[in-house]
Image (spheres, rainbow over the protein chains, first blue to last red):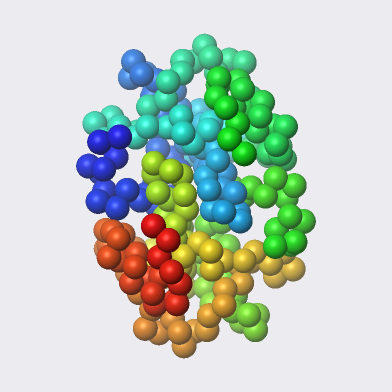
Length: 121
Length: 121
């Protein structure tokens, strides 16, 4: 987490700087980029960042919701590093940009379970 | 908060749907729009939404950071309603899009204090 502190004294990042940021696997291979992210309106808690592979904002491409905690910003790479491979993504929960699911508790539990994480809400 | 629940079963909203959303005062007068918002990287907590008055994404215009808790989404208006007036904004903390401050604790306390809110971190 030291690299996060290095990047900004406040530890804050602007929403439009998250969108479009590259995502790499631990070996440094680019997986895609963050198209957008999902915020719990009442609490302001970011729950998922959406990984996609296509053009900026991922119009027309599959969106893979990743629990926010999976993202680690790497200042050297200038992007996020996540502990997963392209192979893991082959069966991962996804949706198109136009057909965003309800992101209800059932969907959230499926996403967290897929990545071996405890659903915290 | 009932209107939030009505809008989405999950209570989640996509980051790119927050950006560009109109902001109204309680009387229904449009104050501006949300240009972007500031997220605490480690926790994923949204701390501020940035109100601006200019074109989409507010390039070249003043940005007014508002504590996220000040925003209430109104489905009828299709935008956020905040309990403040244009007059209050005249002396409010602001910065240009190009010269974003460090958003350190001192700045955060100033913003919260200006709006009569307790700084919670």
